[in-house]
Length: 313
Image (cartoon, rainbow, N blue to C red; front, side):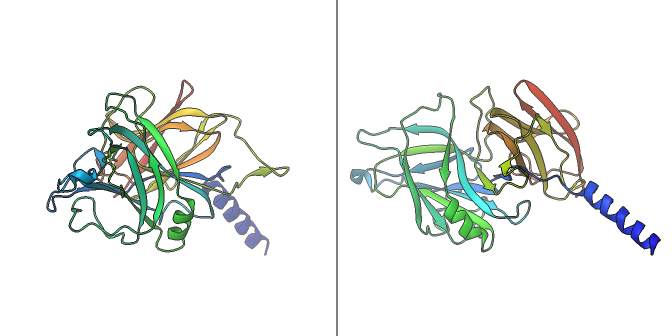
């Protein structure tokens, strides 16, 4: 009996040491699994473009084939569990042009019920139908030479609804009222780099309930910290957690052992708390990376932390 109790205690200790640490804010940053845009010329495939375009004509130009709709997909089936408190769709605006007098850069965001579309084959002809309009937003005119600006859109109710179902979430961004916009967001294939403000590719930032509390209050991390990814080794997804004692501009980048950057997971402002990022072992162009050791580096407030992880295909 004593030996049995000892075995149980050892197993409990091993389980506690092996489990991932609890998150204070339970904030997950999820990159898009697929994104592309369609062009009114039915057989045109635009999946290699580094931007997501939204464009319509003015009423006097409706015979032109200028129409473009953007599509973005997120997969919540791995790396996230729990109750969703808020969900925000984060996009980096690359440009918003006024090409014709009277144009307005307005975008309408819609749900999409058919998640079977693929970024490499989607066209105007086979694109899924848009569902319920979620929100509308008008962007100020800006050229492609201006620094990128990130926008966060509240999509909590829609994400909750989809998370209760198949956990795959698709968006269609279009423009209904023929106001002639020409809006371009960074796609997941964007290779732009530069100093802050940093390039933002499509992300869902999901915040759940706090998991660590003290005297009824959420516990704010006391130091800048990068945790070991979990699981490790992994195939194909893993979760990387980091802690910020205060709000900062953050970069989380993955390198191979030759020092080449293969993926940028976070690039922008993040609030105080514990953050979790799901990496799907894809490079910046959406290609699966081979088995091997990779280094992930967190930079914020003039500090750099890095750890190694093992991908086993």
